[in-house]
Every structure is written in C-alpha cells, then in structure tokens.
Amino acid sequence: MVRAAIRRQVISHTLMTVGVLAALAIGEWATATVIVFFMHMGAYAETFTTEGARRAVKDLTALAPQTARVERNGVEQEVPIGALQLAKR
Image 1 (cartoon, rainbow, N blue to C red):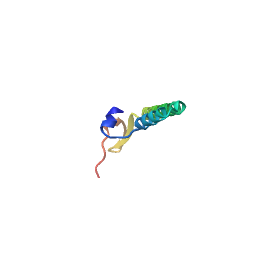
Image 2: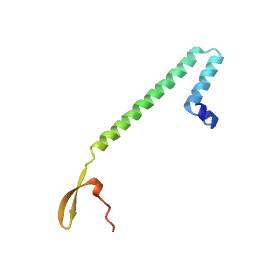
Image 3: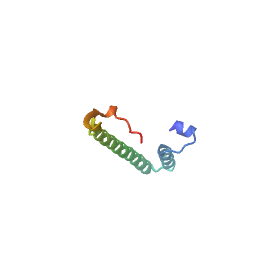
Image 4: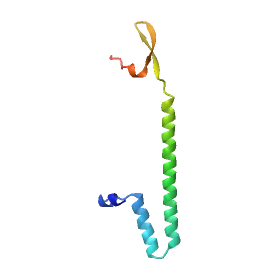
C-alpha cells in the first residue's frame, strides 16, 4: 500500500484504510470492523477464484495430447507435438 501511495495510485487497500480511519475518527468502531471484515472476505474470494482458475487451466493443459498424427508423403505418422511446424502456403 505504501508503494501505491508513493506512486499516487489508489488501490482497494487505500480505500479500506481511509474508510477505517474515518470510521475510527468519528468513533464508529462497528463500521470500521465491518469494513475490514468485508475487505478480507473480498480478498479471500479473489484468492479462491484465482486458485480455482489456475487449477482448471493446469488440468486442461494436462489433457492436451503429447503427440499428433500427420501425413507425410502419403504415410500417416505419429510425432511429438514439439516436432511440429506450420506448413508454409
């Protein structure tokens, strides 16, 4: 948050801090607690969805075939994916 403030960037943590400090300044302890609670829940939800997406991409990548069938000179061959090149037209 300090780096963002130095670069004059407003991030969610900046808004949370301002909200909490303002709530505390006027004596609204419950409001400050609610702000912190919801920001932590948002961070948890973000982490949960990010990890889920990362896991899904990893699982999909694992399903990718490691070989391909190509036809060369009228003969079908199975070759590693890394050995493939795009045909020039």
